[in-house]
Length: 351
Image (cartoon, rainbow, N blue to C red; front, side, top):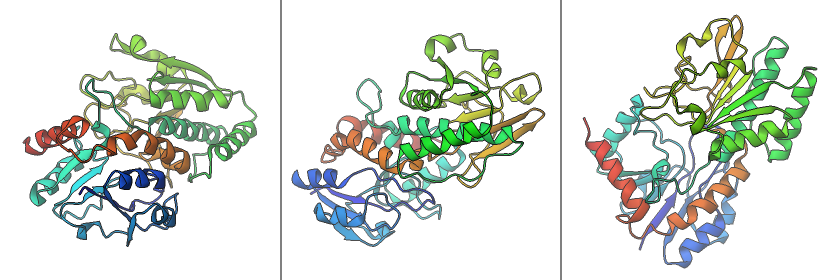
């Protein structure tokens, strides 16, 4: 019997979950066993999972799960160096040359476990089967506008927090923009036709911002892209990958630009393939932007768990996309699971 173990998220400001109680009931109905760790922070209460038929276990108990359990979470595991013996489903961030990626892969090698990376659950054409992208773009554009609004009074964006729903976010953001007394900034979104880009464009449009939307056709020549520097706000929705064009080169910190905020929603600054070369680390909820230039100012927003700012919408949307994939867990060698497993083994064994 397939046993899915839904772990509590250990990362601060992470309230999302990848399966709803209805999803748990569906998996149990087809013969799976589901265990859910208790969590006081998860946007969906633990008792809702218990009512759906899941066994409830203490928070953080996944290391003691039965050897055959498939441990399912979203964000990274505690970086304690312990070998990993279970099969894990999560966003691993380990396949693009990230420094911490090799450490994670070695932990799986040492423990005999396996990583099924949620980012690489794809159909046979390579298209992702489930993604948080829309809400990442939506929230990323919101924080980018918060950063722009703070700049107008000579400040820098302060801490951010989760919102009960997107309507509260929109009301708060509109008030901040109106308080500047200035016209809305000009924004460009690259990757505008994808999930991330469409979310960013929808948020910007809702705030009355005029959006220049670029996608593959506009970036096919490979650069340079001086047009990016002519906008006040740039939202990047293109994932780092081999051959990715550079949209913001290192020398873009120099004067002579309108650009004052970069929202790097794709957020992979440690990758050699990052299309934004003016920063080298992610930002946090407590310090949402990194100031990389002062004359004129240029702030980079690079929070890597943006959808958790809208945990209910993002969890429910993602869980609905992922449930049909989870229903195939009975055969980890087939389809999307088989492809993800093969990719993990290739990277685990690469030296």
